[in-house]
Length: 366
Ligand code: GN1
Ligand code: MG
Image (spheres, rainbow, N blue to C red):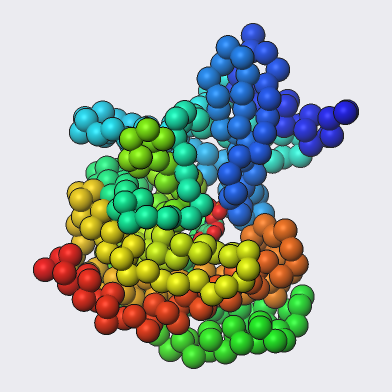
């Protein structure tokens, strides 16, 4: 079969990262990211690599993303070595001309990171042991970056995790939707309306100085954790595009909403997800074991963090559905609406279990 233009473009850009003597590589899709395009590059005589096309419609400055990732991964590798941990954080592989990324004939930005062999990621968490490991890895990640000079990073995605801004974006989209808000979309809009009143709870706590910003991952959902296939320990947190200063509760909230809902973001049978308290306990116990700690204010607002991050993702999926699927990749026309419904169902469950979640936090941080 004759390779398509896109295939040929990918091959040309890939060559800028491989040694000139490398054999023509095999390039196959990898993972299920909703934003970037990711490929595994294998070529005999060369270690396997991960090639990614950074989505320029989402990230306003894709070159800065590649440079940020280079700085963060270099720091993680250094700290891991000093602390003797068993992590295997993949590093950015510069192009042959020394740059952090390569640009193809269409102006798209590509970068390459090391492939961690013998490791695997799980789209859904299936046991408390896995949940503990995800939490431990997030704690370890926060700990290893606690001395990183965030001044060297450029903001990857302005407005990321700004929930009041996402709510305003939904309102604007509703004024001129690409799809009308009927049926399930209307129900989701009602869910949003009921909760607008305290959508800025974390922002206000930050403005009052109760919550301080630290370096965070931004997207620590369960499939961004790599596990060693033989030890079953978590060995890396990947997908560092959104690393930036932020609230640690954004990370914990996002991690918990992802890990504690083993039905996933888009169950094939559209069954509502369920929030599992035992997995929540395991994640938070793991987080503590990873060495990171929370301030008193962070502990008391942890439930809000989980609640508001789940709410936020529901608002983002819903807005994208109404705006005509411009941000998250979709396979079916209703994908973003289904994803929004799952998050709003999960949100209701989280709210219903508030007392249990708060008791558990008090138990882990007595
Ligand atoms: C996106 O690209 P991916 O799949 O790692 C999104 C996250 C969402 C997630 C939901 C930059 O992450 O914020 O939580 O989808 N990343 C960005 O699956 O918007
Ligand atoms: Mg991501």
